[in-house]
Length: 550
Image 1 (cartoon, rainbow, N blue to C red):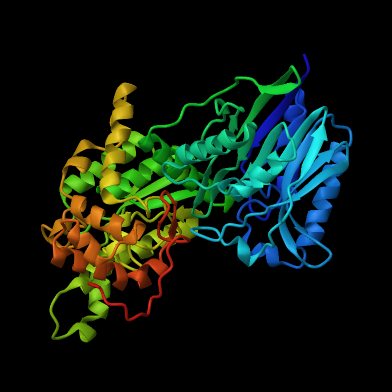
Image 2 (image 1 turned 180 degrees about the horizontal axis):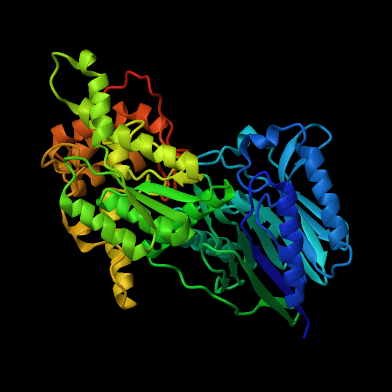
């Protein structure tokens, strides 16, 4: 019986490292061919990584791409398999395309230009690329393939046009970023296309972290009956085979490895871990550092960092002040010991007193307010940044989405740092993740990852006596729902109030969100987990006269 094997090469590339990405393609091809294969399908823009952004505007881009292609052709010359590689291509008219090339025995068998360029949410491909106009079909060892790239499958025409040309399989190169629920959406989408064309689809996705984006992998192969035959693992590199057999003049996809879909909290946890891991490693940091306060946010961030980087590459510093409770000091020490990370305690009272002494003349005749609270936070920020500089560790900030939304954080204080794993994680989800981690540990017979008191106690910044978050904010269950409606759903104050929320609370929360855009613009980037997070997705002017309540 005639057979054909496609390899979905789900790899983690480094944006801009064309030489390194080229060598990775060659290494993966060697491994794949040792397993036996006829075609290797790599992710979108394999050579540059995704998204390369304004690196695409560099004068030397074409030279580097041509050199990489020459190296790939040479490596492919003795190969018995075809390599489908994503790359940017500049034509003779100066038009840049997001393209795919099929290399076979050292020659270019086919070239395809992406037809649908996304320009929404995190995407801005219209800034760089010109859209292709035509389908591309090629034949290999008796099987006919059509090429598509990522966004093409989110539209009807590229698939329909390819299907008209009588192909046996549609190949799709992807760099599809993660958000919660994304894999289910992909499966539904591909299934709907197959319902219309009755042609199998093999969909290779990228994996890895790139700044705030995380690519979750989960590459897919669906047969002509819409049955899921192969699904690659999530959040890790994988080389996964898709086998076809020919029977009665029809190529039939065989059942293979099918990794299970992950539960929502496990999926979110893996995304946060991978985002931190790749940001630290790809940017050359030796490890990660954070201020461990004894509160839930820093506790979760520490757990993420330890999982991502290993306990020996993580440092936590407790920086107590006179308002810091003994419970916080104890719980921070307990968690650091359980996770086995480097741990130190530095009291900030001497620094605070020095600042207040220096400012005594300026503050004469004034009463205490948030200024003194901010000095505490900034003293901690100075200490942490100094340790970060000295040790080469990335400083992780620990503000959750609820706090970042309403400005419940201090510029150049607790906002100081280079990356925020939980920047887009609402406070209620922070608690849910903490409980989830402890339940996993319990199931394994291990101690809680996060001390139970940290989860049970009322949240507090501990910047003044007996301070509680809810003294300044609505209950987090209410706050997070209002924020979700305003930030992710773009609902107006009027719509939110009509949904049953208190008018004064809604107007106050929305006003705080708008007023604190200047803080978020200066904040560390963080892992994107939804379709409308802070960062690439949401861009509002700092200076504006928009009035809440209309």
